[in-house]
Amino acid sequence: MKHTSVFFLVFALNIAVNGQVFISNDRSKQNTESVVLDHASIRCHYQFAQKDKAGQLQTDTMTLDIGAQMSEYYDMARQRQDSLYSAYFNKIPVSSVRSISVLKDKDAFESDAYGGASFSSGRPKESARLYKNRQTGEIFIIDILPSVRDKGRFTETIRPQAWQIAADTATILGYLCQKATASFRGRNYEAWFSLEIPVNDGPWKFFGLPGLILKLTDTGNIFTFVCVGLENLDTPRDITIQKEKYINCSRDEMAKIKSKQTGETRITNNGGDIIISSLKAKDNYHSLELE
Image (cartoon, rainbow, N blue to C red; front, side, top):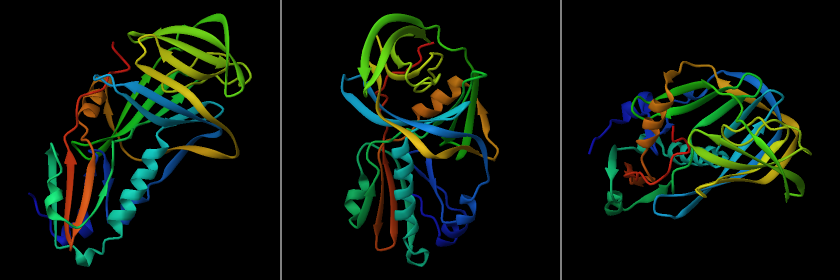
């Protein structure tokens, strides 16, 4: 186990939580200038369901904030989880910290033997934020790079999916929807979009239809995005990006980085002895992109 001094904790400590979240007691580093890219007036919540390689269904709720030109796709629950971690860690008086131990790549939590009070993250949530410019087709993803403790940025320009619109209809959240199909990077998809919401957008990297995509399923029945909540924001929410330096990555490099994420993380405080431990991640998920 690696022990860190209280002096280092106060002035330089950055702990990797879930392999990607960084919590620091140096609050001056938490105030970063942001640039406003657009103003979101529509917020769509999607339940994202995926079958893992063992056939078990895992679900998360993702949020799409839509502006006039830009949109941002992210995991709102991850933001709340990060806030809880920060609150838990920062409420520990620095003067009470005797040592910090970091246990990595564990198959089981060794911190169970230490006793004390613990805070556990549960299953890791999506940490990436995807920004989409519907006019130019530019998409960029920002995520934390665990290996270098910095933020990476991957940028690409893609054409709207080549949708084939069918005559089939369905009702989702009370909106009349129409069916469309397309292929994207090795998978075939079926989408349901509504002309009643004339927004050319959808979850993740999908867009290009004359209405908002409210449901999207791959024909292999592995992935499903379905809208479970839709809001018109009375006060538009700024779509922002932090004004800082990013490490440029390729799509393959970003995928490799994501595959190295750790699993569930626990912070234990036993009378001033801080133990941060993480379960070994399991390569148990299918990739949305096969090519």
